[in-house]
Image (cartoon, rainbow, N blue to C red; front, side):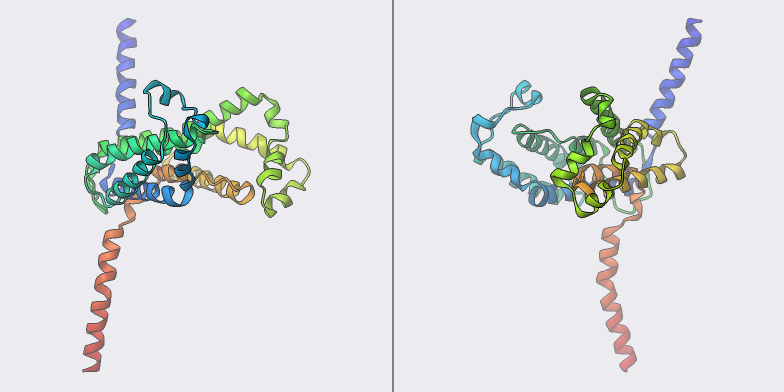
Length: 302
């Protein structure tokens, strides 16, 4: 009996290992890495430039998160915040080219992690950053990868799988938090109505006029988040459908209550076949095209 249980445990462990490290094309890793690091740069200058002001708040408003108290991390100062900003911006732009994936990847993760602690220690904690932080943490382990390379890599597969798990955990744990703190009343309350009053768009105002639609939407949100792990249980074809639904959910969210979840959407690209994206190849082909065209024109004129 004991040997049978041990044998089954070994089989399950081996199956889990194969699932976690399912090989993917290196081109997918290269494209995902470029996307992630370009978003880091965009996040600094477009989405969260307000974090730079936290260096001026001082200790009065800075209440570090648990990890900030545990390490402990320094209280933000203008010098510290500016140093992190410029270092992150420079490192991420270079890393987006695929150079030095480990030498640049680890510092980027640590610096962005501190950037988020500075951001979230002066107010609410945004859960749309979780999967993106996990992506930054695991990308250095994937090693070198070139755009368009069809060679398969288990290390890269592990990095993408862990990111995918973090994406799904973001949804599932969000539902758990809603029910934990809001109870079943979250389903039948005025959560979405309050969100529309605070930050709704004209589209949201139209939707809010439909009787009981917001209540139905709240039930739908909880159901969607609780069932999100199903994305790992379906075939590849249906997985694409579910991921498309995930993206459409956020499209509706940003178009109604202006919440974008941009970093989460970037992390969710770990589900996509990004190896088809070959920016370097496209740039080289674009650079050669004018030359070929001008040569053809000269031949025509002759």
